[in-house]
Length: 283
Length: 283
Image 1 (cartoon, each protein chain N blue to C red):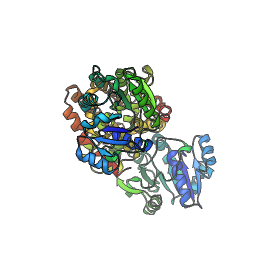
Image 2: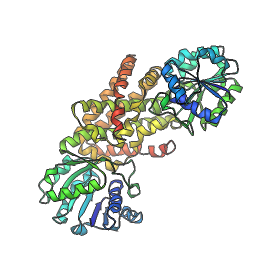
Image 3: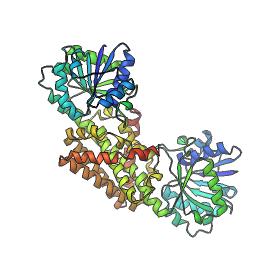
Image 4: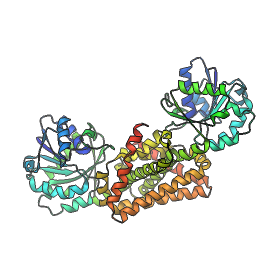
């Protein structure tokens, strides 16, 4: 690995930069970002080696696009225009259908790999970049067959060195399923936070009563609106479907309480306890 | 401290037992539980020193009632009947109004202190008992003025030794506020878990895509239905109020998405980001 370009030097891009530099100390990590303060911060924190811009992309070996998913739609074609035939470019966004459609007919489509690493924290910006964010995490790759074989190989070697496990999916299935296990969790947390904050405006001291359970459930409400708004926009239909089901389940639970059917309330929870076994495989 | 009785040797009672024994190694910790296997396990794990029963309560200096809140309503009066005039008895349940009403006119009302330590994990049973569960946690005390002064003092000394900070509230306000910051979080997590599990029945591999964000948001869905059903039952009116507000917020968010008003979606999240500052004080 030689010249690695990170477009978007925040949590996701910055964490790739840190681990790649550790794996291949001889490589140079270039950062591109429309926020110049973030670029300076990334250099200062040694997240990247140098600032760069789109004109430098012709010397890139790997380009990682780690910006909000709406911005990626405009940026990715420009990146593909600028890179050499032997460059592998991948984005890491949380939606895959729109971006795959966007570059479907691009002359350099075979230089692009659609990737979604299931990793992150609720923090953002260059200072949020951490080592080992991707170790033992799932990395979903979409439309792998559309990428040039040698470039697939290069990307897979990198993901393997980073300690990630690979799952292949089509973009449509990816966007549908990720709505359940990721996008809905964020809305659930944001709206829980909102409900309690609204209450607190009138009733002081409520947060003095909050414990680690509340903190855990609401944690994702710290996430970046700039990152999440475009995700919800791009995955609108699927996210609305998950919200319909979630709201329906909450209403049903409320109805059981109103009917004083606490045996059914017990069963609802007991049947969901099975989540324990599932989470053991995640945490 | 001499003879400490723990009624209910699970996560909450067991964790009190461990820390109390560590603070006062000379004391004897007695356990009472209607599950004999749990009692044996608690002895084996050295969570308690000895098994006991209600006939032994006359020698108790402190009695901690740590059982589901519906069971407490029946057990607490019997405990008060059995203890000496100098015994302090407290329960640690997540609802306070019903229990305070239950013992309102009990001849030994002044031996009882209504307590709710804001501490716990999603695990249960004696093996879930851990050291330092209560360190730096909030302990809410209700109707403190109804407890004999010397016994208040004894309990407060114990809580202070355990490293807890005290907040005084009336039972009605306690139950109303705790519905927001604790009870609603549990339902939110349980129903999120249910929504995703239901989906997974038809669409395999969904959990392969779940990351730490989902795990955090759904963590409380591992909690014990036997503990939580009676809480929801006792706090029915308040919990239904929180559910109404939560469902209304989710519907509003969904409506904004349907209307393609993603500026408002952004603002919803941005205004809730303020939860960061609040959570800094909790975690």
